[in-house]
Amino acid sequence: MTAQLVTVRPADLTDSSTIYAFLCDLENQPLDRSTFNAVFTRNLATPTVYYRVAEQAGEVIGFISCHLQYLLHHTGLVGEIQELYVRTGYRNRHIGRQLLASLEDELAPVGLASLEVTTNQQRTDAIRFYESVAFRPTHVKLVKQCSA
Image 1: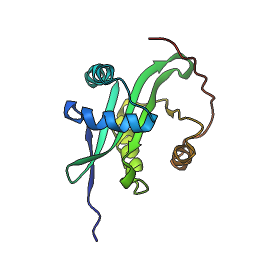
Image 2 (image 1 turned 90 degrees about the vertical axis):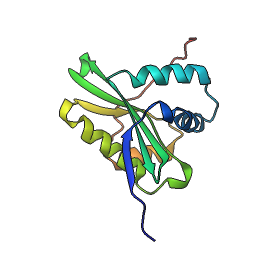
Image 3 (image 1 turned 60 degrees about the horizontal axis):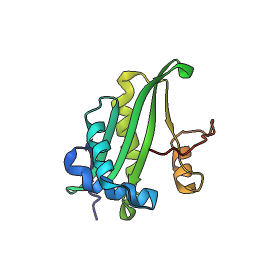
Image 4 (image 1 turned 90 degrees about the horizontal axis):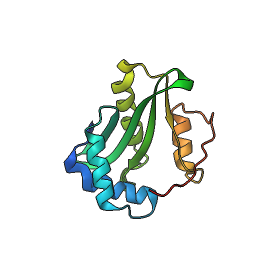
């Protein structure tokens, strides 16, 4: 059996429903669809936000997002992965690695000071994945919920 080719491409508006389903699964709860659509559309038009999807045989099977910002304490440009999701039946096939490698290749010319990611402490598989691709636990993130 030959493995099918996975391609990574920029996400677009036609990917909205699929990415919405991915993120509801990732967060284990339904997200407000109209707010999601507004944020998704806005971020697609923002040059410092990178949304990429992995596709196989015409089906979107993974998603990665990264936001860039200049931070004083890093004295440079920092990328922060906000979401990384691979459809359940496609996990452990290096698709997450392909999404990450594609993102890193695309961002190489901009000269990041660092690439960062935050994940819930309960997501031990995600932590293990990030550590396997050279991310190190150097910071603690504290979160205060605010009303929108």
